[in-house]
Image 1: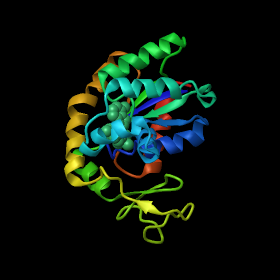
Image 2: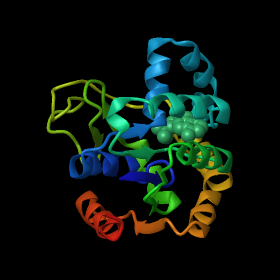
Image 3: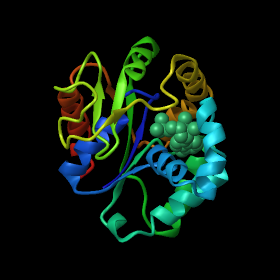
Image 4: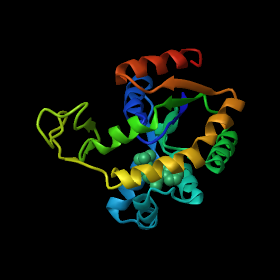
Length: 216
Ligand code: AMP
């Protein structure tokens, strides 16, 4: 199963990807997570990406496409993958299409998770992530039992540098202009499935699974 999750920042792509991993036993490929790790490790990619990420801008397509090309070579990608936060531009989508053609394969589905912008701002400003296992929490909606500590592994929770209101607004503007055109792009290719992204994560997951049933 080869999937793409599209949606504004804070639409729940990461949460749903983690549930899909269990269901389909395929890895999540989050370009955001890969870039954050590169920033943390201080690699040349991380150093270049950080300036863009801190401003809520997109990292240049060429860097992202290279990163994806390498990641797709890993053995765990044989049975498929869930792209989370990639592609983010039409140029990235076209590059992905070429890559997949070269491997004589194609996407099974693109899931568009729809959430209104004011809801997204509320979600992102309260979002917390576990430093150790990546589990996601929200200070109001899904708080951990102990403040600042991950329920799953006891790791420390942190707030992403780009989850502040000014950067969130900028990321949403970038989504509207550069990423939202992917909806029309994938509609034309007859692979787009639209799922409402408001409500309980489990209900959204059920809706995604229902949409994918026809693709198995
Ligand atoms: P995310 O965790 O998906 O919200 O990504 C965080 C930041 O990483 C974004 O605001 C961008 O600066 C950068 N980024 C992640 N994925 C991409 C991508 N596919 N293309 C360009 N920039 C990306």
